[in-house]
Image (tube, rainbow, N blue to C red):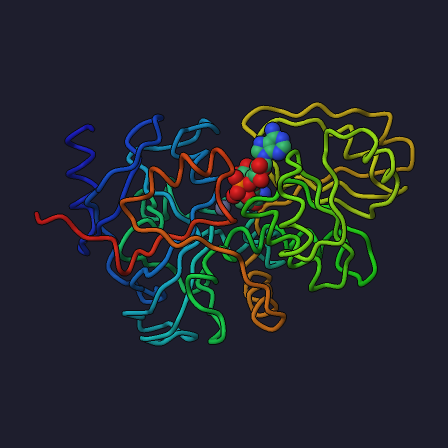
Length: 366
Ligand SMILES: NC(=O)c1ccc[n+]([C@@H]2O[C@H](COP(=O)([O-])OP(=O)(O)OC[C@H]3O[C@@H](n4cnc5c(N)ncnc54)[C@H](O)[C@@H]3O)[C@@H](O)[C@H]2O)c1
Ligand SMILES: [Zn+2]
């Protein structure tokens, strides 16, 4: 790595920090010393205890979206305990259990911000690999400490264990928000979920908690038993099985598509009722093909959704605590992160890796 970059990262702010960073598009992570800003008057600083591994971290570590800045410390499912608050912080105190998701800044004055949709602010600042207001680069939660404006801090309800809560900060809100916005949150509706990974399995849980009938659509028949018995989905379709798809055609009010790679939309559109909605939340690096005829027939809608605003993120986490929506996690040590990334790529995780930062991230002696 460029020695100037290393020095800058370590010295640009007063507070020493330590994490794991990707250095190039190989995506391989290794220990990295950097620094965090002093806790500003509206800032909340916290000790990071757990951080989930989102597939976006993998896309970003490997620069699959062409926007990565190295060294890149991923992680936007960050939870921990408050260590310091600025003089103008109103909602949080030292010792509180808190989290940060994908966004740490926005303009606070555009239409999106005024409508509690900071996630759609044109000037929103991502938790890692983005330029903060002060010109420095943001670093994510695969690190020992975090600092953020209190506006972007979420309170973790007492009855949610911190490690279990972590994935809600991205995976949770990413599926909760479209279920609400696209009106798929009404009891009795029939909702499909494509891709049974980190986002997908939480989508099943939220949709069930909202009273929907849930169909999991997956390429692998091996996930059927688990989906029906463990996640209590109502039905399961193998997306390559023409007979199964034919049998279920026109049955779904909406579909949440969480698939992380290129895949055909045609079979999914066929499953929708008239006026049904296919909502894409997965972010494949290459464009998908959109067949038009099945859209026209039945006035169907294809939409997208990106995480959620701060107000809704807090609402989602409170809803999860109340309705016992708990992600299924595999807690790992920091040193395991590269293996975890390889396994994530192979969909070999049930269903979210969460790094035990508090107990396993050890700073190397300087
Ligand atoms: N819209 C948003 O705000 C938002 C937020 C978080 C993540 N994402 C994106 O959502 C996607 C899923 O994230 P995740 O963390 O749940 O990932 P994940 O790896 O845990 O799950 C992805 C699922 O897609 C399945 N899959 C992969 N390739 C497939 C293919 N070609 N056909 C069918 N199924 C396939 C996998 O088996 C897996 O079940 C990623 O692209 C991620 O970047 C978007
Ligand atoms: Zn994410």
